[in-house]
Image 1 (cartoon, one colour):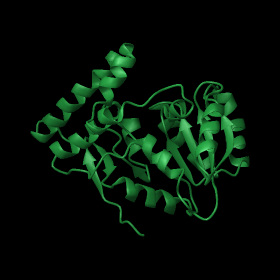
Image 2 (cartoon, one colour; image 1 turned 30 degrees about the vertical axis):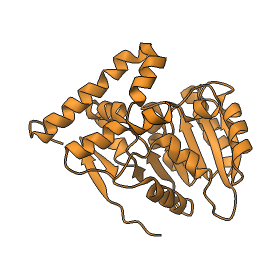
Image 3 (tube, helix red, strand yellow; image 1 turned 30 degrees about the horizontal axis):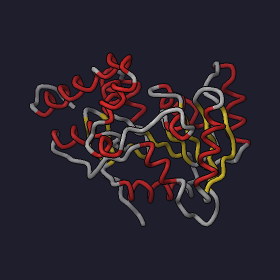
Length: 249
């Protein structure tokens, strides 16, 4: 199934207007690509960072697929008059990709998190999904001097998909800086996905995720994040001012 790319401009970031099913079809197509494809999954907090940080904004706009991870981005698209069809969360995209059938096992490299997190995530993945092989692991604590060794480890694993869990915006900037050196098919920034798979972090309950209340769950679980959470009302104010024509996209 060929899906022509359609993006909408949301505060300067070109977000793909796609459903989860369409995103998975594109993911599957990327697995047969001759060059590295990048996937970014910004939520409203990251979109606000991108508004302030031109470098990050430009990097996000180089993505081969960029999905609306969070109700805030979906709401922003509606306010601006170009609604995306639904939220496509990075965690769900990765989880659903584990069930893709391409007549062979898809090989993943897990990169990021604290020491031991990737190992625990691998156990969960291999115990629940039969179409997946975890080709390699590397925690996310490293210095610039370690990067050539890390890239060699990734390339020698023959992985199809590199999950980069360094947190935003570090993971997006790392992928952009190293894309040309990697031999994988897909690089995707996955934030806290490995922590969830490892059982060290929890997703919000389904009813909160369905109703766009993940931010409230995170705030209740991690109240020290409140300063970062202030970016959420700031972002919605930015979107409204843009819609009123008081700011340019």
